[in-house]
Image 1 (cartoon, rainbow, N blue to C red):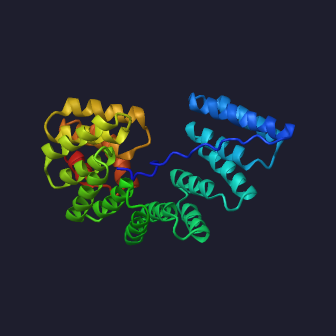
Image 2 (image 1 turned 120 degrees about the vertical axis):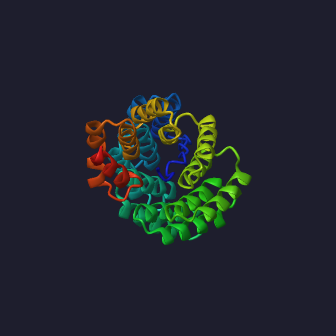
Image 3 (image 1 turned 90 degrees about the horizontal axis):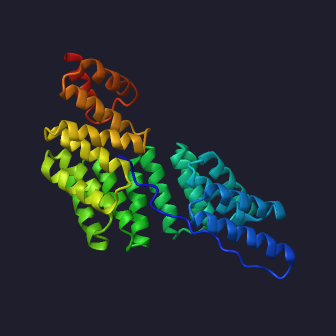
Length: 310
């Protein structure tokens, strides 16, 4: 499970050409970079943004857009560096601060993300993104009451945003408050019935409540809306394991690992598969390390003990 943190796409900054040749030139490089990024050619986009910066080293928008290109390439350190440069040049650059906070989260720098949330609040206490970022930071720090409070504040400021409701429900799920989570998901579905993450979270709640068929139906709805999320495939694979469709489940878990090789839940599920199929050596290979590194992860200790007993 991953709390949804990448639910916002930064809008690229357009260029307004000025009257002198320097502004014209740097603006053209910025626009060319934007065109390349729209074509999903992030490397060429970076080259054009660098040309703009070479003409004007104080061009905050070029640093911002360059950061977004690095983000496409999953180059988080470079993303954070360029966003920091944009913020240095323009201290009230709220979108750059917000994106840097999200990047800090993805880079495992949770306290720095919270600092950016606080910085946004100092700029504008009614900025829902500030409270959203704070909620994500507090969730990562496992301060769930503070996370829930922040998400509620964000939702009050941006009531039409279903993602904020899903994040509230996610925190309640972590606290095993399943009925409250389902009530909020019902509200989110009213706001936006095409939000795939709400169905994925619903599937996880149903799985926790031992409703395997309901969990499978919910995650299949999530996949119908978004086939690009590794977590959805992993969850469906897990449910199939427990529905005694082990080989189909393993295939989906492996597909999830190919899409995201850093998700420990997928390796946990693979370990569960080997327990269920009686392969002690393979089960221990996956579950022993997880039991040490993620001792509180659901099902890990239970299936590690079962693996040892094979």
